[in-house]
Length: 200
Image (cartoon, rainbow, N blue to C red):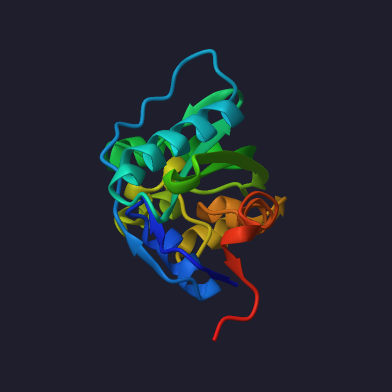
């Protein structure tokens, strides 16, 4: 998959960067400095799309001819949003709550192309089941530092978080922070004119 314009990733997430590299896309990383505030009383799917749009819109004006991609991920357990933990103690508490339970991960994406005045959002939701965890398992995972920069205090990819998850229902890449199939479908349906099928 190739795009005619430059793709701008409005995120500092190394996981999202790695997934775009996996697709072979030409892109630059320009993280948005918008504050991630989750409003109360708003559905998770609305929240992640709104936050993704805010991130993309904050960066896009500096790249009017480029296609800017924003993304946002939240973890929802029993109706409560679990964001990134503030410290190790909060990470431990989040993992204790996730232990033995099923939660839902929502990731929203936004694609903004100022040159054609297009602004499109979409989302995916994936259910994730955690096995029961011991306090020692949680403490050892938190000690790695990995949970501290992730929504819900865990990562499903390339770290110990993967060892705790026996089942997911939905798109694996949603849990990583960038639903690749949804991104592809949005590009194909809303930005087909910006795609190159057989680039030189």
